[in-house]
Length: 64
Image 1 (cartoon, one colour):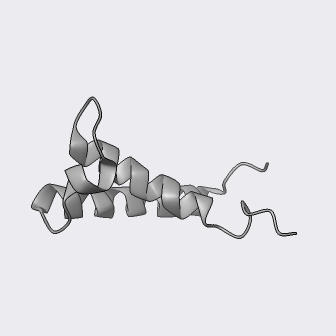
Image 2 (cartoon, rainbow, N blue to C red; image 1 turned 120 degrees about the horizontal axis):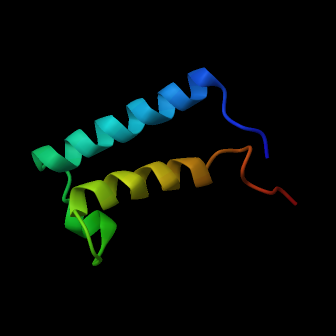
């Protein structure tokens, strides 16, 4: 529930940009990763990769 620090935000931006570059270069298949949808598959795939990374953080996971 806390906002990210400036360093955390910078790391997330760097991760997004690196993933977008991988999808744009064809290293990874954006359409396969992002699935069907509107808009640029490269952008959607990079956002999907970032969302998956965030959802897997220990801070986000509720442990029982």
